[in-house]
Amino acid sequence: MKFLKEILEVWKRNLIPVIVGLVPLLVIVILLLAWNPSLNVRTNLLIPGLGVAAWVFGVFFSREAPERSTAKCLAALLPPVVLAIGLGIWCTHVPNDYRLLCTLEGYGEFLRLYHLVYIGCLLAITLYFYLSGLAGRAIGKTTGRSLLAGFLVWLFTAPALSGLSAAIALALPVPETLLYIRPGLAYCCGFLPAIPLLAGWIVILRRRGERNTPLRALRDFAVGTAGSFLLFGIACGVTLLRANGALELAKQTGRPLEFQAPYDPAGAEAFQTLLRNSEAWYQHYDKHEPRIELPLESIYSWTAPDSPVTPEMRNMAAAELDSQEAKAYFAAAAALKPHSSFFPEQYDLRGFLPMLNTLRSAARQLGGTAAVYHWQGKHDRILPFLRLEQEVGRTLDSAPKLTLSGLVRIAIDSVLAKNLVQLGPDGPQYAEEYRRYLDYFRNTDYTVSDELEFTANYLAQALRWPKELGYPFHNQPLPFFQRIFVISLVSNQVRERVAAQPLIAELRAAAKIGETKQSDHFPGNYLPSLKREKVAHTLFPTLLALKLYRSLEGSYPETLEALVPGLLPALPIDPETGEVFPYTRTPDGFTLTYRNGKHTITTGSKPDY
Image (cartoon, one colour):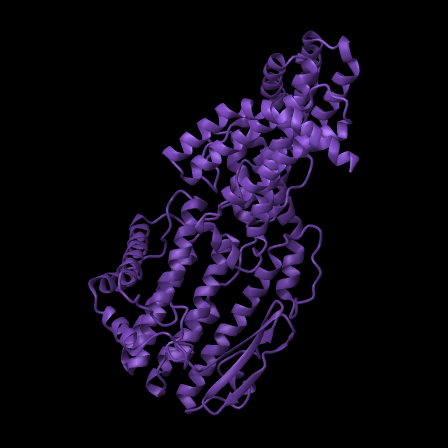
């Protein structure tokens, strides 16, 4: 109780001066937010405002008082810390395009990590500005001088102490997923070691007492700056040597340091037309009341007993397929066929993620169209639209070789394989068509990239020191101070991938990788992707072999052994279990079960819509 009383006493004495000191800041923040309440204004305005508030708290709450230092520190720090956490929750915004990362295997922790890192950065800013206020009080003595000294301490010690902290940060490993959050994050993390350094300097200033003067503080600053930047220079030199060494290791693997297919302007324009027409069709049927729900593309089932999709809504969806927007989209999908490369010449993830999102939606739209015709009994119109769905997935053959694009390709072809089995018409007249699809799935390369080409290619660009280095995830130039952090980060990633090559080859050759332990050098988000890759290579051909068998024989086989060796070279193995996929023939078709991490998934021949 005595400790709490001391904290309350500190608050009684300092609350009014703090409020008076923060009034101009609060007025400016409120006026600017009223003028433009957008997310960027909130972020770019409130974060510096938080720092200034912490600085004012540090100056006023460190005035001479009989209470213990612990009580004063807690009383001063508690409000800014609560404010920092609140701002972190309010201002943190994961762009919609980045949410694609959260929906794929291996990126499940992205959203939680994004929030935690953002709040952590705000807390670091709060503590750093608060310590600047304490240092200002130790140097300036009076309130006016302390405010000025605290501002100068922040202004000059931030870049100075960050040199030393940068040297430490360059030597530390950075988690892989942090690269997807923001390009300056490594730079922000580099400030963290500066906090204890500033705290240590405050202890020295306080122990000097009356002997402390602005001149002595300036001398401390000069010595610290010289040592800081000396260490930072050494760290930069070591980083550049390690980066060149990492690039040489990448070259020794024999892998080409290119991550994108040759540029085809006509193909890129056809692809952009597809994306535009897909969005236009979405916007068109979003305007209907009630909203049009295409099967497979919608979250609602058309056939469930409690489905909210009424017969009237189904008829509206069927009529929508004859709209001008739908016809323009179908024509754009058909126009992809003559081309082999579809993506822009300059790669940028900020533009690439919306493409992948729209591409997945486009494939679902075509599958939903085929499902409408299946519902209507117009079986002769199903396969042409599934061919268009195949063309949409094929565009990713020329995409930058990233883990993400490989996973999206698998997701699109997974839907295509299921649609062919569940929606495709049966009969010997369709056998040749299904045989072509079987060859397509058997010959398609579903290899999910480990991103060695991408990281090595970008590192090679960074080491050429061009005038402006467009960061691949945001396409914005980086100053030297941030660029050296990025080079350190990417060179570590290149080394990780080079070291992982023997393990990756071993896992690809293994029948079972479900319980394989990850090595220290293996990228943590890649092992689930490797499992998805192996499932795709075996599951998709198996589904089409079953469909082809039914078309030829009139029914599905009793066991999967009937598919070997005529339709499949060997029995399909589930990489999670190392055993043949569990298969059961049912009165109305079949069920096939496979593992996806901890989840068991059953697919079959009955339509999902």
